[in-house]
Length: 255
Image (cartoon, rainbow, N blue to C red; front, side):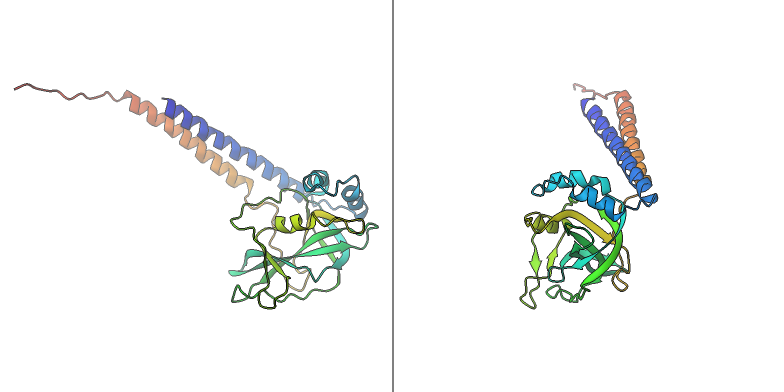
Protein backbone atom coordinates (compact mmCIF):
# COMPACT_ATOMS: atom_id res chain seq x y z
CA UNK A 1 0.00 0.00 0.00
CA UNK A 2 2.81 2.39 0.88
CA UNK A 3 4.59 1.78 -2.44
CA UNK A 4 1.36 2.24 -4.41
CA UNK A 5 0.48 5.46 -2.58
CA UNK A 6 3.98 6.88 -3.15
CA UNK A 7 3.89 6.04 -6.86
CA UNK A 8 0.38 7.51 -7.17
CA UNK A 9 1.42 10.82 -5.58
CA UNK A 10 4.57 11.09 -7.71
CA UNK A 11 2.64 10.40 -10.93
CA UNK A 12 -0.03 12.94 -10.02
CA UNK A 13 2.65 15.53 -9.25
CA UNK A 14 4.19 14.93 -12.68
CA UNK A 15 0.78 15.39 -14.27
CA UNK A 16 0.15 18.71 -12.51
CA UNK A 17 3.68 19.85 -13.41
CA UNK A 18 2.92 19.23 -17.09
CA UNK A 19 -0.31 21.24 -16.75
CA UNK A 20 1.70 24.13 -15.25
CA UNK A 21 4.12 23.96 -18.17
CA UNK A 22 1.19 24.01 -20.59
CA UNK A 23 -0.15 27.15 -18.90
CA UNK A 24 3.27 28.83 -19.11
CA UNK A 25 3.62 27.97 -22.79
CA UNK A 26 0.10 29.25 -23.56
CA UNK A 27 0.88 32.53 -21.79
CA UNK A 28 4.04 32.89 -23.85
CA UNK A 29 2.19 32.13 -27.08
CA UNK A 30 -0.51 34.67 -26.24
CA UNK A 31 2.19 37.23 -25.54
CA UNK A 32 3.96 36.61 -28.83
CA UNK A 33 0.73 36.48 -30.83
CA UNK A 34 0.09 40.09 -29.95
CA UNK A 35 3.30 40.88 -31.82
CA UNK A 36 4.24 43.53 -29.29
CA UNK A 37 6.67 45.99 -30.82
CA UNK A 38 8.88 48.05 -28.56
CA UNK A 39 10.28 51.40 -29.66
CA UNK A 40 13.95 52.31 -29.45
CA UNK A 41 13.08 54.87 -26.75
CA UNK A 42 11.32 52.26 -24.60
CA UNK A 43 14.20 49.85 -25.09
CA UNK A 44 16.72 52.45 -23.95
CA UNK A 45 14.67 53.38 -20.89
CA UNK A 46 14.19 49.80 -19.72
CA UNK A 47 17.56 48.33 -20.64
CA UNK A 48 19.88 51.06 -19.33
CA UNK A 49 18.08 52.31 -16.22
CA UNK A 50 19.41 51.35 -12.78
CA UNK A 51 21.33 48.27 -13.96
CA UNK A 52 23.93 46.59 -11.79
CA UNK A 53 26.27 45.91 -14.68
CA UNK A 54 28.40 43.47 -12.69
CA UNK A 55 25.57 41.06 -11.87
CA UNK A 56 24.24 39.05 -14.79
CA UNK A 57 21.33 37.55 -12.82
CA UNK A 58 20.14 40.97 -11.63
CA UNK A 59 20.32 42.27 -15.17
CA UNK A 60 18.19 39.39 -16.40
CA UNK A 61 15.52 40.07 -13.78
CA UNK A 62 15.44 43.76 -14.64
CA UNK A 63 15.25 43.16 -18.38
CA UNK A 64 12.27 40.78 -18.33
CA UNK A 65 10.04 43.74 -19.17
CA UNK A 66 11.25 43.59 -22.78
CA UNK A 67 11.56 39.80 -23.04
CA UNK A 68 9.71 38.39 -26.05
CA UNK A 69 9.04 41.76 -27.66
CA UNK A 70 9.91 42.74 -31.20
CA UNK A 71 12.24 45.59 -32.06
CA UNK A 72 14.15 47.15 -34.94
CA UNK A 73 17.66 48.36 -34.15
CA UNK A 74 20.54 49.81 -36.12
CA UNK A 75 24.14 49.27 -35.19
CA UNK A 76 27.62 47.99 -35.93
CA UNK A 77 28.60 44.33 -35.99
CA UNK A 78 31.87 43.25 -34.39
CA UNK A 79 33.11 41.02 -37.21
CA UNK A 80 36.22 40.15 -35.20
CA UNK A 81 34.23 38.25 -32.55
CA UNK A 82 31.90 35.66 -34.06
CA UNK A 83 30.31 32.91 -31.98
CA UNK A 84 29.10 29.68 -33.58
CA UNK A 85 26.42 27.77 -31.65
CA UNK A 86 26.91 24.12 -32.52
CA UNK A 87 24.50 21.40 -33.68
CA UNK A 88 21.89 23.46 -35.50
CA UNK A 89 20.09 21.51 -38.22
CA UNK A 90 18.17 23.03 -41.14
CA UNK A 91 16.69 20.94 -43.97
CA UNK A 92 18.68 17.93 -42.81
CA UNK A 93 22.03 19.74 -42.90
CA UNK A 94 24.10 20.37 -39.79
CA UNK A 95 25.38 23.89 -39.22
CA UNK A 96 25.65 26.72 -36.73
CA UNK A 97 23.68 29.66 -35.41
CA UNK A 98 25.82 32.78 -35.80
CA UNK A 99 26.01 35.09 -32.79
CA UNK A 100 27.72 38.48 -33.13
CA UNK A 101 28.23 41.44 -30.76
CA UNK A 102 26.00 44.27 -31.97
CA UNK A 103 26.73 47.85 -30.83
CA UNK A 104 23.59 50.00 -30.91
CA UNK A 105 24.69 53.28 -32.45
CA UNK A 106 21.19 54.78 -32.15
CA UNK A 107 21.48 54.91 -28.35
CA UNK A 108 23.49 57.48 -26.46
CA UNK A 109 25.26 54.92 -24.27
CA UNK A 110 25.99 52.74 -27.34
CA UNK A 111 25.50 49.43 -25.49
CA UNK A 112 26.50 46.12 -27.01
CA UNK A 113 24.18 43.12 -27.17
CA UNK A 114 24.36 39.79 -28.98
CA UNK A 115 22.59 39.45 -32.32
CA UNK A 116 21.67 36.00 -33.64
CA UNK A 117 21.80 36.24 -37.43
CA UNK A 118 20.40 32.77 -38.12
CA UNK A 119 21.73 29.53 -39.54
CA UNK A 120 24.98 28.97 -41.47
CA UNK A 121 25.92 25.59 -42.98
CA UNK A 122 28.85 23.72 -41.48
CA UNK A 123 31.86 22.37 -43.33
CA UNK A 124 32.46 18.71 -44.17
CA UNK A 125 35.04 18.47 -41.45
CA UNK A 126 34.40 19.70 -37.91
CA UNK A 127 38.06 20.73 -37.75
CA UNK A 128 37.23 23.55 -40.17
CA UNK A 129 34.85 26.32 -39.14
CA UNK A 130 32.91 28.23 -41.80
CA UNK A 131 34.30 31.50 -43.12
CA UNK A 132 31.61 34.08 -42.33
CA UNK A 133 31.60 37.49 -43.96
CA UNK A 134 29.30 40.11 -42.47
CA UNK A 135 28.62 43.78 -43.20
CA UNK A 136 29.89 46.43 -40.82
CA UNK A 137 26.55 48.17 -40.20
CA UNK A 138 23.07 46.69 -40.42
CA UNK A 139 19.49 47.38 -39.41
CA UNK A 140 17.90 44.30 -37.86
CA UNK A 141 14.39 43.42 -36.73
CA UNK A 142 13.95 40.55 -34.33
CA UNK A 143 12.69 39.11 -31.04
CA UNK A 144 14.30 40.04 -27.74
CA UNK A 145 15.35 37.31 -25.32
CA UNK A 146 16.44 38.60 -21.93
CA UNK A 147 15.96 35.63 -19.58
CA UNK A 148 16.03 31.83 -19.22
CA UNK A 149 19.27 31.24 -21.11
CA UNK A 150 20.21 28.18 -19.05
CA UNK A 151 20.40 25.05 -21.15
CA UNK A 152 21.69 21.59 -20.32
CA UNK A 153 24.80 20.56 -22.20
CA UNK A 154 27.45 17.91 -21.73
CA UNK A 155 30.24 20.17 -22.93
CA UNK A 156 30.75 23.86 -22.16
CA UNK A 157 34.24 24.02 -23.63
CA UNK A 158 34.74 26.90 -26.06
CA UNK A 159 36.52 25.81 -29.23
CA UNK A 160 38.41 28.10 -31.62
CA UNK A 161 39.20 27.78 -35.29
CA UNK A 162 42.10 25.37 -35.67
CA UNK A 163 42.63 25.71 -39.41
CA UNK A 164 43.85 29.31 -39.28
CA UNK A 165 45.27 29.48 -35.79
CA UNK A 166 43.08 32.47 -34.97
CA UNK A 167 41.15 32.79 -31.72
CA UNK A 168 37.94 33.54 -33.60
CA UNK A 169 35.39 32.33 -34.46
CA UNK A 170 34.58 30.38 -31.31
CA UNK A 171 32.40 27.28 -31.34
CA UNK A 172 30.10 26.96 -28.31
CA UNK A 173 27.21 24.73 -27.32
CA UNK A 174 24.82 27.37 -25.93
CA UNK A 175 24.41 31.13 -26.07
CA UNK A 176 24.88 31.25 -22.32
CA UNK A 177 28.64 30.77 -22.81
CA UNK A 178 28.87 33.97 -24.86
CA UNK A 179 26.74 35.90 -22.37
CA UNK A 180 28.98 34.82 -19.51
CA UNK A 181 32.05 35.87 -21.50
CA UNK A 182 30.80 39.44 -21.99
CA UNK A 183 29.46 39.78 -18.44
CA UNK A 184 33.08 40.19 -17.35
CA UNK A 185 33.91 42.95 -19.83
CA UNK A 186 32.01 45.95 -18.45
CA UNK A 187 33.88 49.21 -18.36
CA UNK A 188 33.15 52.92 -18.29
CA UNK A 189 33.26 53.02 -22.09
CA UNK A 190 31.63 49.68 -22.85
CA UNK A 191 28.22 48.40 -21.72
CA UNK A 192 27.37 44.79 -22.53
CA UNK A 193 23.73 43.96 -21.89
CA UNK A 194 22.73 40.29 -21.33
CA UNK A 195 20.29 40.34 -24.23
CA UNK A 196 20.05 38.35 -27.43
CA UNK A 197 18.05 39.57 -30.39
CA UNK A 198 17.05 36.81 -32.80
CA UNK A 199 17.00 38.55 -36.16
CA UNK A 200 14.33 37.67 -38.68
CA UNK A 201 15.16 35.26 -41.49
CA UNK A 202 16.97 36.78 -44.48
CA UNK A 203 18.44 39.63 -42.42
CA UNK A 204 21.76 38.54 -43.93
CA UNK A 205 21.21 37.21 -47.46
CA UNK A 206 18.97 34.10 -47.25
CA UNK A 207 20.07 32.79 -43.88
CA UNK A 208 17.15 31.34 -41.93
CA UNK A 209 16.36 32.00 -38.28
CA UNK A 210 15.78 28.74 -36.41
CA UNK A 211 14.85 30.23 -33.04
CA UNK A 212 11.34 29.52 -31.75
CA UNK A 213 10.13 31.06 -28.48
CA UNK A 214 8.04 27.93 -27.81
CA UNK A 215 9.49 24.59 -28.90
CA UNK A 216 6.90 22.27 -27.33
CA UNK A 217 3.29 23.50 -27.72
CA UNK A 218 0.94 23.53 -24.70
CA UNK A 219 -1.21 20.77 -26.25
CA UNK A 220 1.71 18.35 -25.99
CA UNK A 221 2.20 19.17 -22.31
CA UNK A 222 -1.51 18.50 -21.72
CA UNK A 223 -1.17 15.15 -23.50
CA UNK A 224 1.76 14.22 -21.26
CA UNK A 225 -0.27 15.26 -18.20
CA UNK A 226 -3.14 12.99 -19.26
CA UNK A 227 -0.68 10.12 -19.64
CA UNK A 228 0.71 10.64 -16.13
CA UNK A 229 -2.79 10.79 -14.63
CA UNK A 230 -3.83 7.61 -16.49
CA UNK A 231 -0.75 5.78 -15.24
CA UNK A 232 -1.53 6.95 -11.70
CA UNK A 233 -5.11 5.69 -12.03
CA UNK A 234 -3.88 2.40 -13.46
CA UNK A 235 -1.55 1.90 -10.49
CA UNK A 236 -4.54 2.21 -8.13
CA UNK A 237 -6.64 -0.21 -10.18
CA UNK A 238 -3.83 -2.79 -10.22
CA UNK A 239 -3.39 -2.43 -6.47
CA UNK A 240 -7.14 -2.89 -5.80
CA UNK A 241 -7.37 -6.00 -7.94
CA UNK A 242 -4.15 -7.43 -6.53
CA UNK A 243 -5.34 -6.89 -2.94
CA UNK A 244 -8.60 -8.79 -3.63
CA UNK A 245 -6.89 -11.95 -4.90
CA UNK A 246 -6.86 -14.44 -2.03
CA UNK A 247 -3.53 -15.81 -1.02
CA UNK A 248 -3.25 -19.49 -1.90
CA UNK A 249 -1.63 -21.68 0.68
CA UNK A 250 -0.22 -24.98 -0.28
CA UNK A 251 -1.56 -28.03 1.54
CA UNK A 252 0.99 -30.33 3.04
CA UNK A 253 -0.07 -34.04 3.34
CA UNK A 254 1.73 -36.36 5.62
CA UNK A 255 2.31 -39.84 4.32
